[in-house]
Image (cartoon, rainbow, N blue to C red):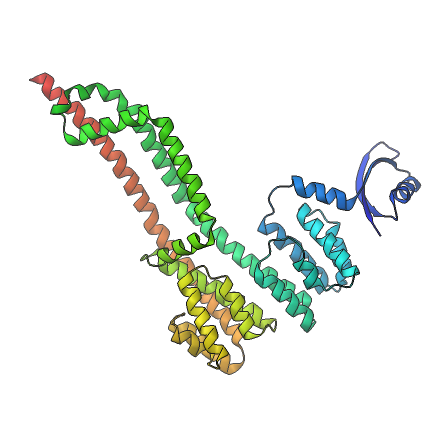
Length: 401
């Protein structure tokens, strides 16, 4: 039965908004009239959701996490799947999510499975989420599979948030330093340009600083345009997966940043693999899906070779050790998990260890980055000030003669 969104006035003149099910608009208007309401507007909910989708802000990962967490909670509480999906289609979530659940509800009434209906939406879900849903349907544990998928999405979102939060202060510091240098070159240094008339007698540093200030003042528009163009080109390059992968691989070679990124990637890989295996996804399929979340091409190649060795009959721990994909502790945990039949639990433990180690590495990285940024910016500003002081003192010496 179609759903309609309405806006109506009650007997006291108050405006009411809501939804109701009816065979058509006339039936919906009649039902509202029986409730003593005066219809102001009445539209199909699907049309309202489509219009909202066009106008809505960007769909965030947190919106998806909340919506599917609610769905998993309803299913775990015993609510039927069709009823839970219909409830989400009438919710106040992001319009894209509402439209997606409405489409899923229609597909379920046509006899499609939930996993197929979910795959037919345009929701930006990670690849492992659909596999978990399909595995949950096959095993009869859809609610638990959804909950596990949401938990993994929450972990991924939390890691990205921690990295962004950790880099916010250094980024602001660097931006403020660059702004200070630009302002000094553009507005402060040119004030001393008259000293260049004695350029033959000025120290090299003083002459270079003053010429740099004049250049920045005369071509500030071109410089800002070049910076903006460079930022646009960098953003476009970063949007390409190949470029991000190469940058990530180079960062892994750095002394402090590299171990941090490796620990973070290993933690994510172990947690995804543990979640997939706990939901009865076959090992080879789980290895392929977990590898998709690895950003480093070199590490991804190692894990792919390990998966081939497992397909050939080698134990997972031995295959990973052969490719040097983990640490000694990781091999031991995987080996114990294989022998005891508790591989998902051991992988979760590995993920937790790497997660804690990654946080320690992140603190070490920030402990080095912030002072380094301060030293570099302070050094540049110091060089400018020294150049200005040298120019002033040289001019005074010439006048004294």
